[in-house]
Length: 455
Image (tube, rainbow, N blue to C red; front, side):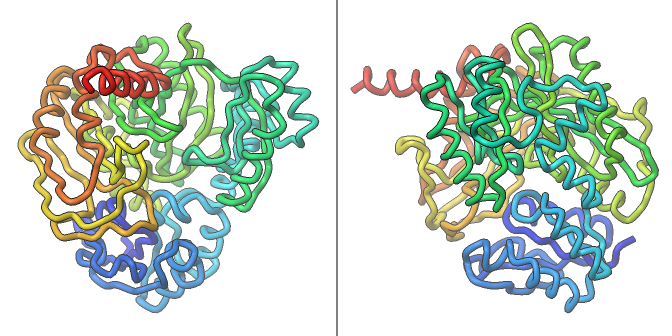
């Protein structure tokens, strides 16, 4: 097994990986920016290395400094976590060229599945349903022609996109040109790649994803599905597993397609296949995340499988210890992403000092976080500060426990989305579980209207 792993990340995921390393008897090296000098992941790791100033490009996106830190501390592997360099095939190649192991898929597969146009072509070849569209990068003129053919509304999407960036919804033809230019500029800014493709906009779909684990010996298993439809501006806010609002027949189709997709491209790590499902239960592949995901925690709770530890073992070359029939579902789990954002000010980021913090506990309550009382949240990074993961025998038990836990959660000093999640837990649509990707927008309009009526 690896002797020492460098975690090329920060925050909650860095803490999560360090804990997995400790359980496996592996030493860990935390890298940190000057803004993260008091970060929890720095305090928990076996060793630490400062890799630069606060801005990501000067620290967590600085490939040379990260690899130098790994080599100078005698590491034999690098775990990228999620975000930052986690889906950068050139980083993975450089890690391998320096004699280190990249804890993730091989760079060629990452490149193929990370590029949306290439991924879609691979899925077409594998016979997996995809959303109608260009299926490849196109220029503006060709994009407009395809949009006319498939009909509006359409989505303009960055080929190398992710995290909701480089996406624009075009409802009418007259808006196409300026939205195309916006998407392209954003793609260049965030991904250094301005390639754009077009696809049909599926109205009010559900966003369902299948967690997969694949080893380097050709073995592939799925860990069932997650419902990730509760989103705002393409950013997930709540996830749950399993999804109660789709049929078992559709679930089996999604599992089969996810496994088929992995085998078709020779995938060899932990990953997620994401699908859109329309009101008639037609389903379409949209992308693959070639990394650990934020919401992996809910799948761990309902399967009892430690996905992070398995990801490390797979990278070392070990075979999966499970056959598909060994993996079973046990109850339900719901995850609330608590962010340092002000819901009364259009969810604007709210960095600052946490004056006091108290987290809930008890059976079926899990907190994944990297913040604490007295911690100063820097303004340079993602606003997620805590994941509250609730598990129970039934979904209703989870919702009740979710409410009780949110009532107990105290984070003083900064605005957070705790109250938003609490109010959401009482909404009839959420309780029934029959929501789609448009529900959060409608819910927020309700909250705004009710606030005005109260005034």
